[in-house]
Length: 123
Image (cartoon, rainbow, N blue to C red; front, side, top):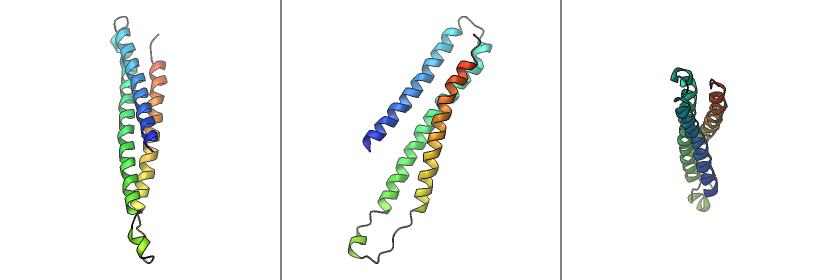
């Protein structure tokens, strides 16, 4: 499970580095081209950067909901008393699903901003 978290951190850092690299390119092009032409490219890269950081935050909440769901379903009393009612945990399960798809959607949107920014470059 820790390797999955490490991979997620690496993936977020890589996409963020690509956005920062694009911003450096826009800053270098600003010396040669009018900044009004580069404004939409810059905002696409900033929006992608914000999207990938929000995706990381949503992933953090997903891990929190996963931990709570696991804690609800590891009831030691179930080993002693088989008649003990099972915890519901439906809210945690629902929020795990919502945050999982939100993180995936934000990550894909962030990556989609890179070619969109490149398409808007006035070259």
